[in-house]
Image (cartoon, rainbow, N blue to C red; front, side, top):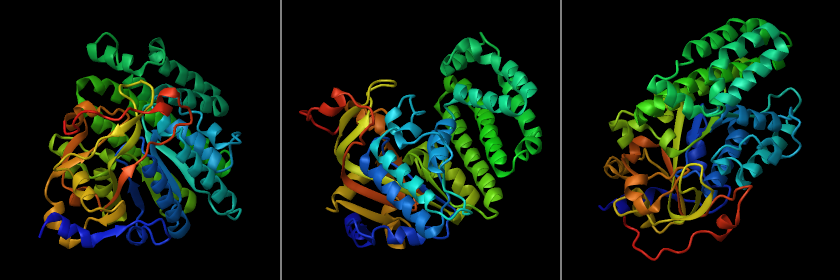
Length: 442
C-alpha cells in the first residue's frame, strides 16, 4: 500500500465543531504535560488552535498552567494579569514587556484573545479555587531578571539587595548587551561573572524559608518569582558564553534551562495546590518534538520534548503542527522588521507535501497508530520556520530529517495558513510579500 493509502483512514478532519480534537483530548486526559508545538513563530492558525485545545484542557481536564517559549519576567506580568493581581487593565498592557525582537511572537491578536479568555475564566472561578497561571520558560532576559531580583530584595531585605547589586555589577559595563558579554568572556578579555551569579542564587535559596513565609501564600509566590529570575541569570550567563562555542552547546543549555524551569514550576504549583499540576506547554516544534527522532539529535542536540518524555514518560503528550503553504509573520534577518511573507509549498519528499496530497484542509493524526509505523518510521523532510524565514535558501535553512512517529504523539496539519497579526505593524507588513515569479523547489 502507498503511504497515502495507509495514512488516509487514520486522519480525523477538523471541521470547527465540538467534536474536533476529541481523540487528542481523550489521549491527554491523564497527562500531566501536553506540549503543543508550532512549525513557525508567526502562523495565526497555530496560535488559535493551540489556544482552543488549551481552553478545553483547562475546562475539561483540570489543567492549571500554561508555560510558553517566552522570557520569565515578561510572561509573569501576563500571569499577574490573568490572575487579577496586576495594575494592567487591558491585555495589551499586560503584554507590554514583550518589546525585544521578535515582539510579534507574543504581542499579537491571537495571544490577546487567549489571555482575555483566561482572565475571564479565572474571574469566574470560586474564591478558594486556585487560578490558572501563565509562565515563561526561556532565558534571554538576563538584565531584566537581574533587575527583578534586586527589586524583590529591595522590598524584603535591604542588605541582601546591596550584596546582589555588588555581585551583578560584574555585568554593568556591558549595558544591556548580553552578546557583548558572551563575546568578551569567550575571547578572554573579561572574566566571567559565573561565581557572582551562582553565589547570588545560592544566597537567595538559603533564605527561602525566611522570605517565603513572611506573608503566607502571596510571599511564597513572590519568592518563587525572584528565585526563578536568579536561576535564569545563572543559566543565561552560561548561555551567552556558550553562544560563541557552537550551536549544539548553546541550544542544549537553553533547552535544559526550559526543562529545569518547567520542573521548578511543576514543583511550585504542586506545593501550592497539594496535587500534581497539569501544564500545557507552547513552543516551537523544534523544542517540543523528541530530538532523538530528528536530525538534531543525530548532531548531538537535545530538546525540551525529549527531556520531558525521559522524565515523565506516558504522562507527557507531544503534539506537532504543520502547514503546506500560505503566509507567515517573520523577519528576513535578526532584529529586522516583521514582514508578512509567503510560505512556499512543501518540498517534494517532505511530510508537508505528503499531507497536502491527502486533500484535507485541516486534520489530526495520532502518530502511534500501529498501521502507520511503516510510513512514519521512515525519515522524511520536515519544515521549521523560526522568527527568520529565508525562502530563497529554504531547503538548507528550514528543513531537517525526522521520523514523525517517534518525534510526536500527534500531528495537526493545516494545509493553507495565514500570518499572525502583530499588535504593531507597519505598511510593509500590511502590504505583504509580492507573489513569487520563480520556482519554489530550492
